[in-house]
Image 1 (cartoon, rainbow, N blue to C red):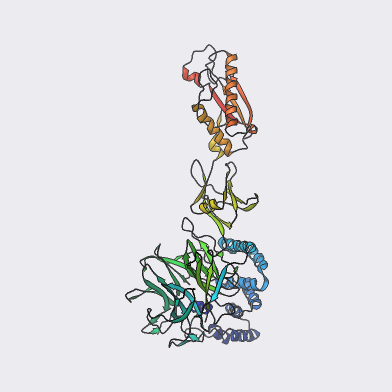
Image 2 (cartoon, rainbow, N blue to C red):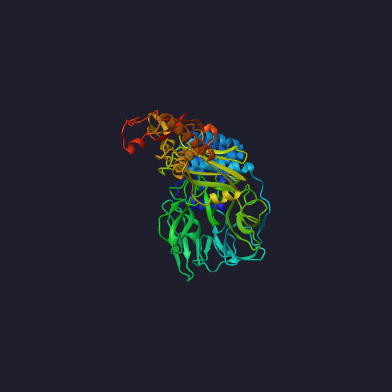
Length: 637
């Protein structure tokens, strides 16, 4: 009995009572006798063609016994000729190809069929492949097989005060044999944790009431002082089945008073691996609802002290895949879970996804070798150790164990998982605060090489995750928009991830306008003191807008054009306007512009009067002031 058979409980009928017996191959397959199913299906296909569903059953049988070559051939036949293949079986096909043909063939297949997959699945696969390339095998990790393991299946560890709860199919209690596994129905055991983290003795857990059938995957909430666990659906002490002959698994909650309540129960849907998030009052679990992305998916429900208050919410395609996702566990702002998605190291691997500032989840990252192996590794739990490191437990059917699945203890210096840098935010127009669609974002390493280049969504949103860097530069831009650029070292990178990372870009059209038939920088009207060329604070305030515009668009080249009114002599006005133009140029150069930004500075005096206030004409002061002006003409727009 191992995790695969536990999944089979929720994916296949447990009895053939309601199953139409089409062939001996079908009978063996639905009875989990995969070698016999292979033999019978191959006999039958000599006499007549197998139905597509039977070909898939045969492929599944080869998959179960580890013959990935024959499995992949059959999956590919059905995938090429028909559309009945589920996402779950599609994942098995890719797993088979991966184990039989290597990672490169998987990449080729994914590229050729990319429109058929969710973008999240493709991103997850690409990202984990990139991490594996640059990762080293985990160091300073101590992994120990527990003394308390038995020759039967032992899995789903859970912390309980100074003890460890877990599930087992050992025959220590007088339970009946579960026919598909040949072992006892699952039960919950407890062992006291020793100082070194080992569990030397395990006994049936007496605080949870007895059941003749499956009782498994416990979780204890210290805050509620309640137990969550799964058990077979029963009525009057006997198993209950749906109209397809399937007995499903329900999630129940046991109060400290001894009162029991079903929380999630349906004859056709199995729920298991409950985890209660005390901080957010959410109950997480795995289930095989019809909206599943594959085999089993992870969900949560809102609760009120454990009582269900909402419909189940699927964690979505960033977490759930065409494979099976099980065993959710939250720790230090991250979600840990197990998945047998095709791009892992083995069958079932442990993954880690960071909970971001807005509550969304980052790309799940395979936590790497040691914890994960070529076998099935699942049911991961972790807590801080007594020596500033971390201690935890997980189950695995890797070679060298005592039974089908064993529980392993681990100790490590730092939290598991390959380190990544993730950002989620928005690129907005600085003036309107509206999101900018298709803005280009680039992430550069300390050498200036591009790590990632992508574009924002229609509303300006973006999400990105890359392997950790010692330094990173984040840039954003778009045609006719300014450039945003900032550089962080590791400390700054840590802080940047904690909140929504928003980048503002100035739109060139918001900073320019048409005046006198020319394209100029948009600023307010300003005046020098009468007969003076000194840059006063009021003049500087407007010139700073020019500095800001050019700093955002450093490619701009300007012509500074100063004008006076007609009062005074033409010669003195010409000279004054040139002094003012030169004073402006000096100010701009001192405050950030380079000489390449200024094509020329010209004083026109009273040569270009805008109205009738020419020499000798009587005009009111405000009319004269219309002629006193400075334009910053864009020479290369």
